[in-house]
Image (cartoon, rainbow, N blue to C red; front, side, top):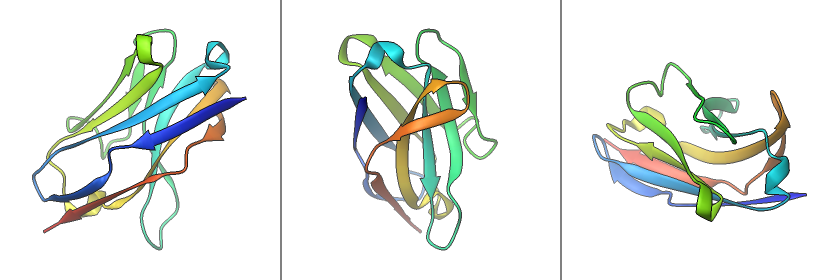
Length: 118
């Protein structure tokens, strides 16, 4: 089992920045990748960014490229999502997820709300 706890959401003005955190515990040695997803009201959940747990490999959705950065603190078993140049279109509940094998996100956090005002 892997447990994920997100934090760092909140209200920010357009153009501002936020950093989300996702602390992993439990069988972290089994994790293949960690990712961030988001779900806006009335929309389907969408992929935002991914980081391979044991390497520096990252991948971003087009909407996140150049504005968001996913990183990891090995000592803290924590993954971050630094979000810059935020716009109202980024308003959503952001979830972190852990995969034990490629593209199979089995474990999910509770979500953290990000609201960007215009």
